[in-house]
Image 1 (tube, rainbow, N blue to C red):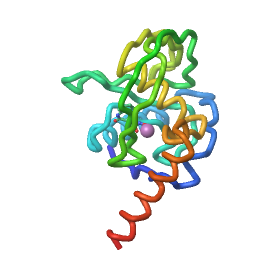
Image 2: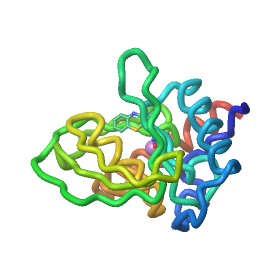
Image 3: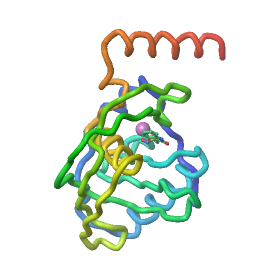
Length: 167
Ligand code: GNR
Ligand code: NI
């Protein structure tokens, strides 16, 4: 197992649109394990392959309090999205920034599991928000890009100031 490096916004590689996985093989299963390790270490409740610079449609999520329920979604598709969830959203690629967003409260997703078999899953609340957030990453979108231009500018300014102070 190995912990992977998470790309940080505004890294342009975060804007890459991920390609569908054509075969769920041992290499993909190893990547899923490494993504899980990276997510738990961060710590976070989800991670998209895009964030570790692998541009294939794979996400991992664990919103369980015990942190013992890792689920991988390969080539995920949203079949149904209903309701509105007001959330405080953050991202491992945008550390220390939290902003209010609106997402669907409930989603039904279809994907392939790590075993290559299709499954459907219904999620609500944080788990549903997380699935939508990770699927945005696969389409090259970071959550700050859903905010107003003004908020995006403020976030970029904050990140640049932090980088100056760290240097
Ligand atoms: O760990 C994470 N927490 C979180 C909180 C609210 C809404 C979305 C998320 S996802 C985030 C991990 C991450 O950046 N995944 O891409
Ligand atoms: Ni994220």
